[in-house]
Image (cartoon, rainbow, N blue to C red; front, top):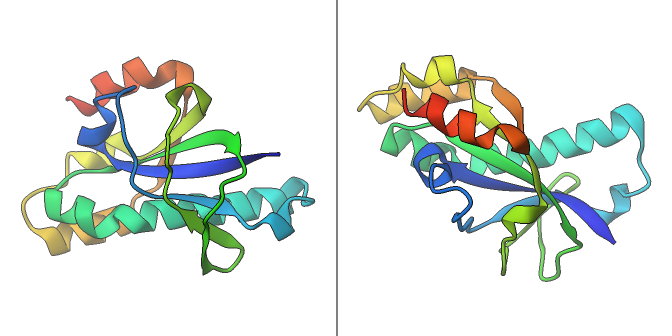
Length: 146
């Protein structure tokens, strides 16, 4: 069975695409696998949000944005309950070819990040994640270099 999983990275880590190595990932709990429509969108949004939040402090300290990669992968083993209907797991072998999209802090807001970790944290918490298709990654990397 395939599941949608979410892998958080910092923007600088993402720039090494496709040579990235996420250290954690999140996926909806198996009990949600029968959901459809808005209910499915909600649980997937929650898993993506957990991924973005997992990186929040580190990204704020580094003064950079977050990228959450979405990939369709075989159901992971050795998961832990992250809360709600979300599981966390360590991706043993991340496969870039399975990535379908990225959610990144609004690139227009990334220019506001600086050396003050607390101010950065506030910016990141107020910034919306913007969706990009995997076919747009080259352009997205260029956009984050500006």
